Image 1 (spheres, rainbow, N blue to C red):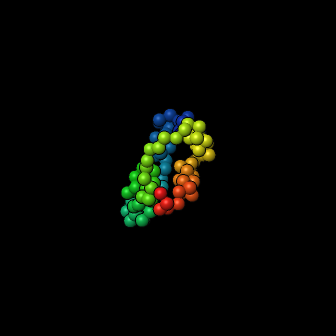
Image 2: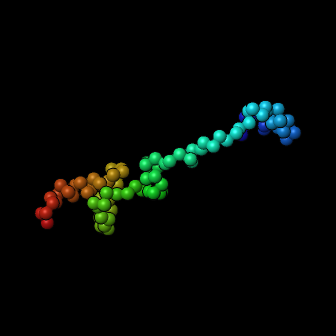
Length: 99
């Protein structure tokens, strides 16, 4: 560790310093451990989820659609959430059950 006193100490000096620590300052495990407590609901859910994107609502379906490059660039230029904004615009354009 930068700045630690042990960086400038010789191995013998480190051993001597460790021997000077009183026994009462030694760490003794008392049997209580973070891993001994029951997991919370949030921790269990996070463990089941694993890495990656959060689960979706299941209401949407992934599709492939061909769009003009300039249109796609304009949509993406709006930043994150552009696909949701496209979905909302199409929802307004095509009312449910009208196709």
